[in-house]
Length: 305
Ligand code: NAD
Image (cartoon, rainbow, N blue to C red; front, side):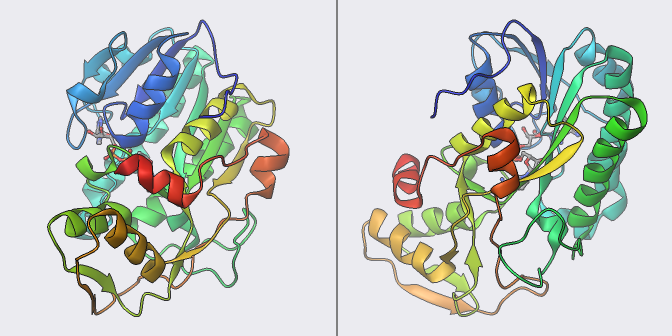
């Protein structure tokens, strides 16, 4: 990963720090900071929390657990969420508690600590965009409770800078991939194709495969978080992608080659609500955060192998 100057000598809380993205972030921060992780281990793993970081096993929805974990913190990276879109469709109310209400409580607690909050939002808030690349000012038309909840969290977080002068930054992740993603519940297409390829196939593409995605390596997502923790450009949301588009068919071909080359590639019906194209305009993150993606897809897929 690029050598980025992140926070030093701080007390840091990473919610969801036993999960895919949160644990990579903990790895990057633990040497120079006092790192705490608040995680209920619902989709994360104790073993992914690095040595030197303190695990508070608890639910972000539990005010007492949140209170204890946030005591005296300088910066909070808020990654904990109900990340499974189908689960938010099945239970919008319960997922709203985790994705929205707990975030609001966290922002209130951060206000009491004057702590900076860096919050994980999602490209899902754009829904099916009118044009790509999509920029931060484009319309938000989420197509799932997950997307609506991330839109709400995104807005609330920025509002805390406007209303209360709290230092906040929102990062809208596109399709994040990398080591440890497979263990999680996000159901991302890279992990699914690797699992299918390793099992000898078939690798199943939903629809024609001509739909495109912006795959961003977790190291670059960590880089964006470290920059967000130290930037003066607060109260803003930033797209975090690679800025390049890849068809799902091309991804399937690459992963087939990396998993032995024998798997058959088949097609099934697309899921209702699945979007055609997703590509981040990352110029705002480039200009204001100094963010620059460093891992291209071929190199990044090698890191998963
Ligand atoms: P993950 O499932 O690996 O990590 C989420 C972590 O949060 C897990 O360790 C889980 O145990 C924990 N968690 C869940 N509910 C909790 C609760 N109520 N209390 C405490 N801990 C709880 O998923 P991830 O891919 O690392 O996602 C991290 C964040 O990034 C999420 O907010 C997600 O919505 C967002 N995001 C991810 C992607 C992606 O492509 N992976 C894309 C856009 C946004």
